[in-house]
Length: 87
Image (cartoon, rainbow, N blue to C red; front, top):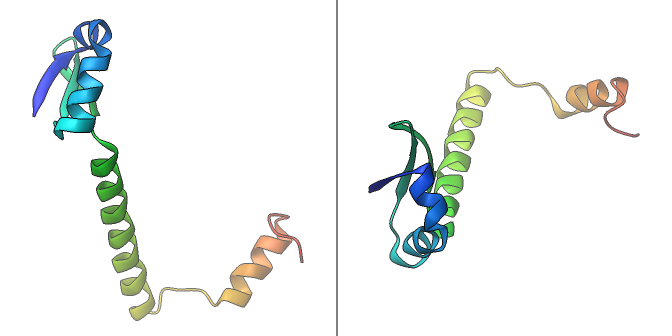
């Protein structure tokens, strides 16, 4: 994983995008020496999103098993009452 400054990234954006997209490199973008963001490939982004979805599913299952969920009908009625869902 490489680190690049914002100014250096601006000067060679295409190069860094290609390194992430085609080389699979993960590039940390730093501002004033502090990490601010990262440039990653779309494949890495998709993997991250899959991991987040899996974690959310595990948390939802644990909440269900602990009896911390609300029946769908009750939740739907709340949404309708708040004007967030039409009947």
